[in-house]
Each structure stands twice: as structure tokens, then as C-alpha cells.
Length: 311
Image (tube, rainbow, N blue to C red; front, side):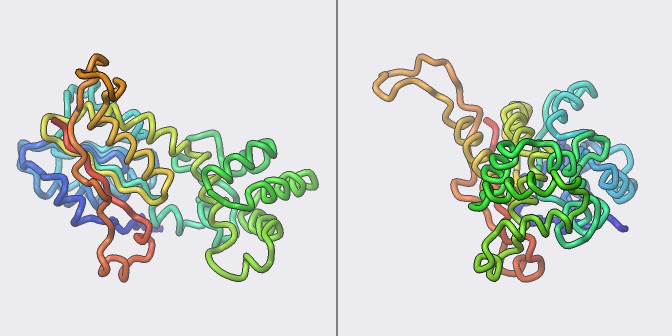
């Protein structure tokens, strides 16, 4: 299957990056190379672009798409949490812009055997990096009822988390839960019929929760932001697109803390903690998709773009 991914908030992200032709840019979630190609086109021969992704299919697709740009482009298979250290090993001291598009790609959702979607009857998987040992199947069958409850409640924000966890544990005692449709049926039976009749698919929140746990998504984001902001050259910008409130809250908090890091009590006449601001938040409110984008791609409806600029 061809690697397809609609680049959400593409024009807005490119505009906010303030691309310099001779600059150095990093895309930590390269995907199919949609944002990347627009950035690379604007670079002179003196510019440099680094694309990082942990998904082998994304690396293959983006490498092919960006091949025409030659030595301006370096594609690296890795998790973006390691991007700064990898670039330092390559002799890069800082970058002029960073992009993180945290959404699951259309390719990942629409390739049945990847097991990301509740729409296809396939083996449970959900690994963004298929070299990883932990899969959705391991979580569903191996985590305790308490662990499942906390994941579904905290990462899926599902009001029926306790009952869903209870049903999963009860059913796996009969036999291993191996497929998406088996899990769908368990979740459906754990949610009251009157709730199931309206709104989103009953599995949506649980699948989000399991995927986040499987790929350590929030942990990776939380652990990466301060280092990435510090890696920006003066005036450089980091643009982050999130797709649910948990991610957005982490980004918003990290940006605010890097802008105003002082922890001195308000009554102190001068700062004594020694924490220095790294820059400023450009987007006091997130940038949202346009009406036109929402009409052409309904998967963009929850997207939010936040931007931070280095001093």
C-alpha cells in the first residue's frame, strides 16, 4: 500500500517556521515527507534538512519522495526523542526550525495489518516502530486490570474505563484476545446500549489509550521538548501539531515553562532561582485548521498548532 498522509496545517506550519534558505531544519515525525518537501524546496544549496521517523514504511516513502534533493536531505530511522543526540553525533550544533506532527498517519490507520484501527478485522498491533517488542496484543493480554483501567481512563479519557478493563480481563481468562474485532466486541459489551447508539465508535477512546501506551507517546513528547527547544538556534522556531488534549496540554505547559521558568515566590523582589527564559510562545492560542481544510480532511478536526521561538 502506498504511504499516504495528509499534511495537516501545512501552510500554517510553513508560514510559522520562518524558513531561511541557508538554514538547518529538523522534522522529527517525517511520515511521508509532506511538510518536509515544502521545507526542502525553500532551502538553498547551503541549507540542510534532517528527517526522522521510527516507522520503516515512512522512511522508505519519504526517502523516495525527497531523493531528488540530494545531499540537502538526510533521512534517519529513529524515535524523535533521540533526534537531538543523533544530530549532535553528525556534527550539528543547532537547528533553525523543528516540526513535530504528532498524528498517526493515514497510512498507519488505513493499512489493516498495522492494527491501529477498529475498522478492520486484523491482529492487534499498533506499533509505530515495528522493531519494538511491545504490541497492543501484549498490553491487552498482559497488563493487570488496574493498569488497563488507568491507561483507558487517563489516555483515553473514557468514562467507562473501569468496566472496559473488567470485561477485557474476564474475556482473556477464557482465551487470548488476538484481533481488533474481538476487542471491539468486548468494549461494546462493556458500554451501556443507550450510550453506544450515539456519538463516536465505542472503541475509539480505548484504542487511543492502548496506542499511546504501546508507543509511549506522551512520555516521549514530555521528555523531548526541553531538549529540542534548547537545540534551536537564536530566532529558531519549533512548530508542534497535536491531535488530542493530552498532547496539547504537555506542549502548552512546556512552552509556557520555557518562556517563564522562574520558580521564585511572587513576593521576592528579584529572581534568585537563576532560571532564564529560553524564548517566547508565539501562539498564545493554538492555530486551528481552516474551514476549507476541515471540509477536505475530517481527520484534521482535532488538530492544534503551537509555536515557540528561541531567544
